[in-house]
Length: 328
Length: 110
Image 1 (cartoon, rainbow over the protein chains, first blue to last red):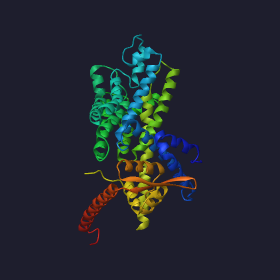
Image 2 (image 1 turned 90 degrees about the horizontal axis):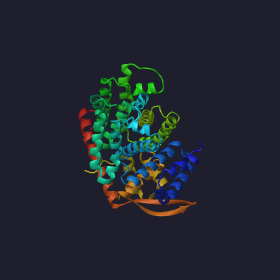
Image 3 (image 1 turned 30 degrees about the horizontal axis):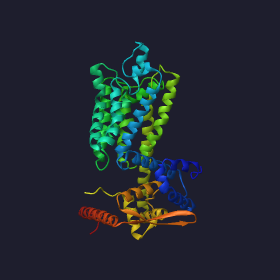
Image 4 (image 1 turned 90 degrees about the vertical axis):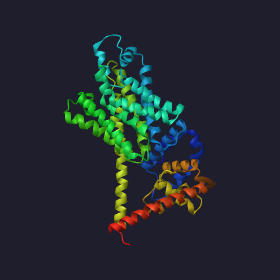
């Protein structure tokens, strides 16, 4: 494939206009020098690198924060997810659906209670998503300190939600959304370097706490939710325990251990609208059905993005070891 | 204590000690300094130059048009030289500590 054509142009479009006005002629000169070099040329990874940094540059200029703090990306992801979903639902004409999502079903139709099984807008899940959307707004208005406190509270709330739901008798969101959104909030709260191990530990503990509480309450878990969504049948308890831990906790911990967090943000930000659009189109064809967007975004996009990042990191380490062996 | 300097940043600043360099020359210089280990992709390079410029460690020196291509040359600022010097001292101290301990273990010769 010719990576110096349309893919390169799309990647360059990821940068904000002001950045392109300043830098694009220079960058194009650089790429032309690179393309002429017989050993290199422009590869797919160069194009992806440009796209990822382009999105980072947009985030910096939009939020006016430096690119290093991963909390900017995590907060933006949470805000994008929550705000987009809220916008789609509120813009819909099915007011019964909105009311049901908020826990008040005016029609009294029992079949609509099925809608409460998935999605973030359940009676207790709604405040959680509002908090996640509020975190970046608070950050812009009041600074990172208060935003991090709010994010930490959101993480604790998400981890405690299954217990709260059982205690109050209210419907609860599925484990997928709890584990991943709470991990994202924890990521925002603890921040990036140099406390990488602490952050990874917090993420894992949060995901495990949500998993354990859901298991105790006989929830279906991430793997069970996927199986149910795609009609694959029931799964054993072991799967329901290991599934959330492996699919959510470990990749997130790995994401914190790997340096190229910009890739994770870029992959998730690119995947989120596509997955949300998929779910919205599916919902349009069946408005009385369930909205399973929560299983789409974190379960598909997150492990894929992290797998790519970890594979690149391991590949780099293997090349270093090979080089060391060659030298010795 | 200033945050630890990452290797690509360290190598970019080290490459600029040779004198002003444009983007692609910087990539080649970093690759040479690292023995081929570190290859800066364009997005990473210009993101790093933006950041180093914001931190006052690097600045634009001059521009020229060569074969219709804009080349912007970058140079180290005095603050950049100080930062590179401090990072070098820090790493040298770590290497010394590691060497002493490895010698005590008998892994390295005296």
